[in-house]
Length: 218
Image 1 (tube, rainbow, N blue to C red):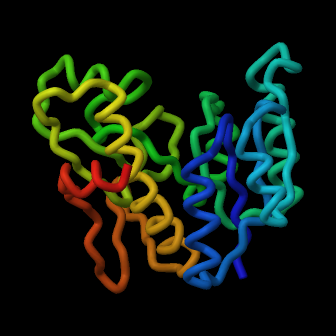
Image 2 (image 1 turned 180 degrees about the horizontal axis):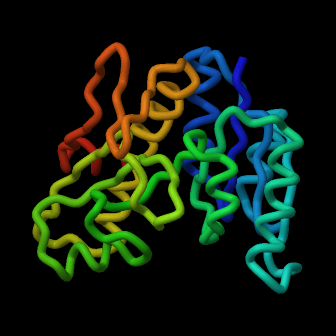
């Protein structure tokens, strides 16, 4: 039974999707803890209601990023994680923290990496006039939003799209592909070969979402 520790900053909708799928599909794992960098993170209540341990490491209490990451690692390690999952965790992590969990920390980014790393991805995608946008689950490395890609989802950009409409469709896809990637990890099905990720036995590492289907879910 593998231990998953999930880091959040807000409502943690991806965290909630992972918790629900883990229970429904009976993964060989458990969400051991949800850790937030804000005491008012709404996702903490969901975790507590589902019997999951919670903790807060408030980044505002630390004058330096390195000091915050040191304390965060100490808290995370209490739960002996096999996998650390970043689910809307709005902090840039230091290299020592990332290297501590190398090969066992995942993130989801709201773009088709390597396009649009960083913030405001939906606005930047619209401004660039791309026909496809989406989300990427990747292993975390010291280079921000550039780790080995596990799975991606693509959604069409259509006439009349704004940031709100586009981000909602992308988020719906995140709720599908992120639990899938976490399940592959805890089942021991992911292998890293440099920047390449292999899934054994093979399974599609992409999702093409129909804009009409995604909008009907909202």
